[in-house]
Amino acid sequence: MLFEGLEQNDLKRLVHHEMHIDEFKSKLGRDEDVCVVSFKVTDRAPSTDLVNFIEKGYDWVIDADVSSGEMDDGDYIVFVECERTIDTPRNIIKMMNDVINITGQKLSDWRVRYYKDQTDHPLTIASLDKLIPQTPEEYEKRYGNRDIDKLKTAAGMKVVTTATKNDQTESLRIAAGIL
Image (cartoon, rainbow, N blue to C red; front, side, top):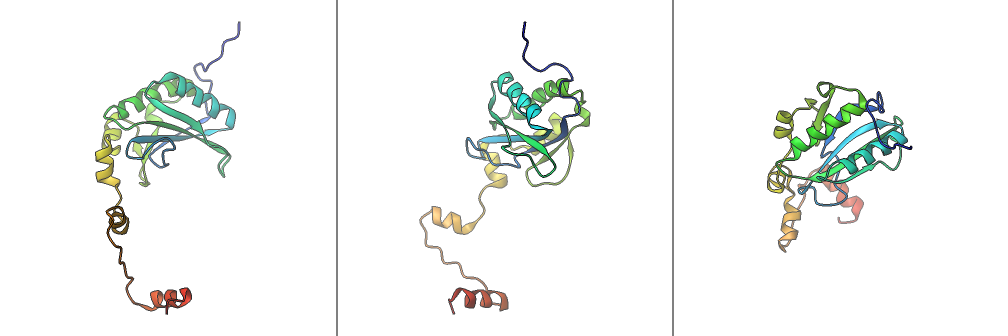
């Protein structure tokens, strides 16, 4: 009889214990609607196994995928996309409790980084609750588009942005043939 699937410690020493959240853009939805969880795995085959494990194990996972090629250090990135909801932190912890069963790790070994922040946080529900915007509105409030010219364009307003005049901007104007 052939048994396919991952068992305890099958991925021991192959999954890095650092998770990143919302560092990458969603490929299946808007960033304010979809949370992207990522972590590194040594080698392509275990990455694919882990993706299959995650996709088949959780109905809240929209998609899981592995990077198309290896990173500079030879590792691959596993991406997990899920809907941004108040359940997201608990869902991530539930998934990670299953992942550590097949990696032989402890949850207390894991660290998480959110978005562009370079600070490591413990992988706990409390830290995820603080780090992850749990609704599209909360995401927009924290990280929404703050570029005034883009907002003006979206509103159909005329954009008349002028750069300050200094040596650098004048040389750019000359190089562009504006002066």
